[in-house]
Structures are given as C-alpha cells and as structure tokens.
Image 1 (cartoon, one colour):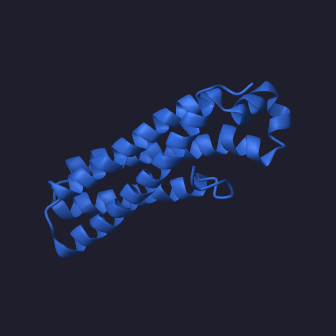
Image 2 (cartoon, rainbow, N blue to C red):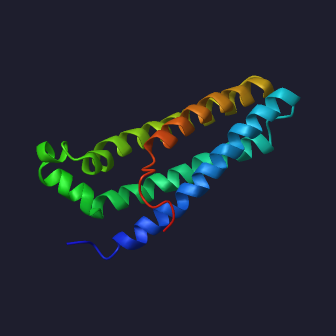
Length: 150
C-alpha cells in the first residue's frame, strides 16, 4: 500500500533536484571564475557554497522521508536477495542512497575546508574540487530514465 505522503514527497524531491543541480552548477562555475579572476571568496563564494550545501542537505532530508514511504524501497527491503536482481529496486534502495550520501559528505567537507582556506584562491579551488566531485556523484545518482518533471 502506498503512503498518502509519497506523491507529495516525490514531487518535492523532484523539484529540489533542479534547485540542487542549478546551485551546484552556479557554485562550480562561480568557483572557477572566482579563482581565475582573483575575486575575494567572501561573501559571494561562501554564499554559493552555503546555498549548495543547504539545498543538498534539505534534499537529503526529503529523500530520507521519501525512502521510508517509497513502495520501491519497501519492496526491496521485504526481500533484499530478490531486490538485488531488479535494477529499479536496487538502484533506489542501495545505489542512489549511497551515491547521494557520499555527495552530501563531499559537499560538506569541501564547504568546511573552503571556509578554513588560507587564501581566497585556495578557498575557490577547494570549493571547485569538492563541489565538482559532489556534483559528479549526484549526476551519476539521478535516475535519468524516470520522469524528470513532476
């Protein structure tokens, strides 16, 4: 039986995906430009980093709630051995979850390291590296074969 909150959570999770992707792209491009042009990291670079990590954290929390009511995840955990043979079940219960936890960890590590960087150039470079790695995991973990809107 599908939870009544599932359609709402999937809609919110899908919408937040675009906000996370956009903020990540803006952060990566902004860090590249900021480093190359010698801009000060604060306030713009730090703000972009905070926006990305905040949106990604919110997305993670919504995703946690979603995984608790998802019929795909529930089906997987009702019989994990059989679930491992199904691409969709395995993807959402295991692969997507692991990739997104790793992406969130990289984003937060990068944010902390950028804040403590000794120069603006190092802060932008750190942000670029860690946010870029985080974005790569997010892009790998998005179910591109599913509806991208709604």
